[in-house]
Structure formats: structure tokens, C-alpha cells
Image (cartoon, rainbow, N blue to C red):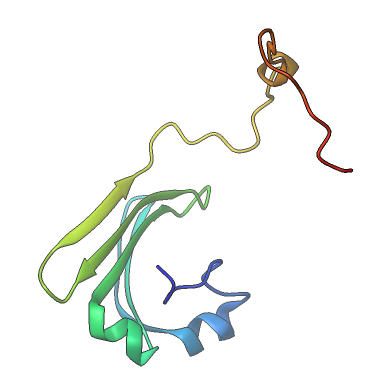
Length: 105
């Protein structure tokens, strides 16, 4: 993953400098984008990066890396929640049985 930097691009011009667009298709509110990094080292390993996103919300629905050897790794995202309220109790830890040491000194 060292050959890829995130975020993908700061703006559209940066995106165009970093990626060659292979295809764009839409079906309803779903857009499928296939790109290939322009970086020579990345191109040696990847045949495409495939992104599916919702055109209304902008949420990423799927991400796939297709490699030159024919394998692929795909992640699908469902029930996307952006900045949900997190109860403060999530950050309450029971340190019973542990010694807390201040590492600042």
C-alpha cells in the first residue's frame, strides 16, 4: 500500500495528474469509476482501482484493487453513517487490576 497515498487527490486537477480514467458508468444514483494510477511502480502491480459511490450522498459504496496477476481485493460498505453521535460511555474503561503509569516523565 506504500505506492498509494491517501487521500486520493486534493482536487480534480490533482486527481487527473495521478490517475488515468479507464471508465465511468452510472446506474441510478450509483456511479462506478475505474482508474489506473499514473505512477509507474503502481501500474506494475495494478490493472485497475474500482470505486463505486452514491452520486447523491457522495458515500463510498465499494472499493476494489484489481492486480496484474488477476486477483482482486474488494471492500463493500453498507449502512454508512457519517459522524454519528458516540456515547461518552464508549470511552469509559475499567482499569481494575491494571496499573496506570504516566509515561510523560
